[in-house]
Image (cartoon, rainbow, N blue to C red; front, side):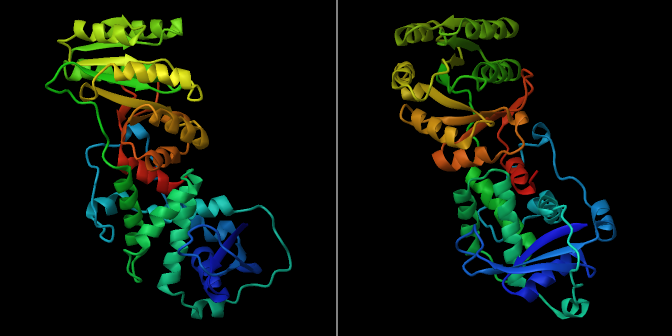
Length: 403
């Protein structure tokens, strides 16, 4: 048996929701009034919640056969068709294609998450005649659908503040008779716009460009450097050098040295800001110098000062700084880390270990929190394959489709 809760402005509308999803054989188990949480602009009044049940084998057999998975591995998603359209009320064909059947999948996933195994006896059967004659207003159906999307964002660990912000912003752009397809397309488009275009490392006319990689210990800075450098080396035939200032861990130097030997890239060990300036002059004819910094604690001001001094040794116009973060880190820790490094320098964001998490809300949360541009994402240990530019479309789809 499937037991599911439905919310609406009135009891009749809630029953209609149950009829549309569970079918005419559904039975009402409980009715109560609640004060909904979540989207403050949309849920102003108390709602009626009913609990309804139906035999799963009869009702959902055809529906389950019809549905197909919308999920796709991160690395398989194309990065060349990112849409940045500032008309959320429109539903471009590209978006419609990407969102095909997403509405049905959202409903299925929410139903499965809320399904419970408890069965109750002595429940009167739902009045079919009443349900057949009840017609739910379009605005209420849209409201229920928006709440469904809100729940999916939260389940993917999008911070409640940012989920409210997205849905609050589209409220004013939607017409009352907007279809669910248009609502979903607007939310999808809004997420893409907020993620923004990724900032990538590019070869420039002035040489060399010094690229710093900063971040806490254990996030995969050294491996990320090797992945990005190998692409420039093999694809662009660029002249790349490795500098490492991570002299606190012998293993870190040896790890980068191993990558340097495999890729045929020179490696310099840097102990101070003065060493960095001198080494840069020695590699004046190189295109890129990638600097691997020590994984320092964001709580230690002394350690942060060391990194700041190293970065400031290179003029701002000759450098780029990338903060490397793990997608598996708790959001509250990411808040502290990003704030601490923001005191040092402006940066772009690289996220690692996407293959080790099932929820990628942190990417969106940190982007919204810091307003720093996203750049690369890594999703495995293979060098150079498991790295790519952040794909805004792919992230939006994953945030909306749930687990």
